[in-house]
Length: 497
Image (cartoon, rainbow, N blue to C red):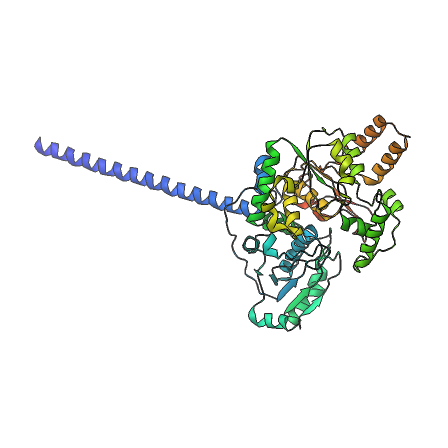
């Protein structure tokens, strides 16, 4: 009996040992599974951060709209670097952007795509310092240059400056420089520009405005343009912090409308639009137009141009349109623009109709804006941030900022953007002010004309061989938006002339 009891004890010990071993194995399996799942989550999160909303293989974002609204330019994000792309470097591409902030912004997106498909190294783009605005800002004064470089390293190699041996060539003034052909497709760069890069080692493109086609490009090029625009081009922390302060102040007082009132001296001089101006002002604008040789059109019929819908709406006309659209007179209106030509005299009608008009100069202290003085592109960056976050965005002219913000708001979930039909509106306004159209009929006509002009989904107009007249890619980047249907992701309205 004693021996039997001993055997039972041994058996019990063996059983307990096996049980403990089994439990340990189960624990190990669970721990390993947890680690694997966590690794997958981290990798998927990193991939999502890299590609951003709607850019992952063309599918819509997994984030909610409120999350998407704050994912760009508003919340600081954790930096997750993509893996580097290794390729045989064919040479170096330098670019000098021309124009205002948003013209340069779209050009930067184009040049990144061009550099990627030529397999060259891109030098951080140089910004325009010689145009009307004479803004001395460098790239890193406006955009987070380190984020720009690192976030795109899986597509293209970007350096802040040329390597020393090539930099000497640049400093000696022997750099090969040229303007690329406007509205070119990618084959132009591969067949015409790339051989020059291989020959000279470095090529400098001295103009970048509208140098890549709107349409007819591979889908991955279009999506890369979007990725640069909506993910890689992040403003500096100083600009973003001030932008957040402006947005928060506006939000505390309820909904707000951003009015891109493009009624500034340079626009009026360039366009030749002088409706409502005094003779002295007309002379001043004409003198300015002739002073800038790169503004090629000198003799302009202002009356006819306005009738054709090619002029920015005046502040007085804008006040009538906002009233006709039944905007609440107490709504906050943020003016995203520089100094309005004619000052308070021209703004009085708009201010009287909508007294809650604010500007960044009102919402921020003079000390806050002091570093931005005489830096129009940095000021425009603040307006860009506020424009993205507004409840309604209304541009009074279809310039570069109007178009780029329109497209960005589509990307953020088709946020309401009222796209004014200026040709129709000036005709209606003239009928109303002459007394031939009652207010009720005027207001009804304005509302009906803009029922579907609200920045919602629409096909991009394509006009072969007439790119200036077709829809701008950055105003409607539909390749980067949720597809129209499951079978046709790249749907565009084509007009054969």
